Length: 254
Image (cartoon, rainbow, N blue to C red; front, top):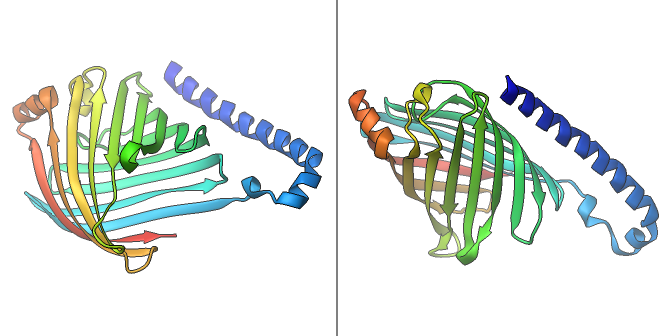
């Protein structure tokens, strides 16, 4: 109950903060009208950028299907991020997750984020859970796109996720993108069938050919495995521990 109240209070706080920010922005616009007439007001423009990937292929024990949406709406400093991922790696692995995050730029390459996530199903079970989500997203040295998130579930469980990927240009249009992603749990979560520590790891590479910047077919190789105590638990339950996936798909930007 306390976690649910905390989630509601957090959303109310940021909603009210957004209203206050809008009022303050309006005052600033009035006081600085002459400057804006001379130099423009790029920071007040509303932009958007979304990427959608859809693929189909084969896993070790059946058909693999995936759909991934990631994008934002907003200005240079304040944005609303929407993320959704649905995947099915054969018979034993299924994941459906959605996120809505307020994002604030605080340095040239980094944003701080806070919002809510909801699991309709996970890599482990079909348990449905909501989370308060806090994270950082940005560009690390060597052009590594980095995302780090901490989750507090409605039941008071703590977990985290870390992901990095990088674009390697073979030609101007042919690009390969190696990546890795891992999840960590602060405690055993029986309903999710995970143990504390690093629960799983996914590595892979996606190679796309950009016919245009907005349209690119791609081919991807992925390897996903449960790790440590979570892997031992999966073996005891007669579940698959790892999976190798080959897919082909389409990437759209708008």
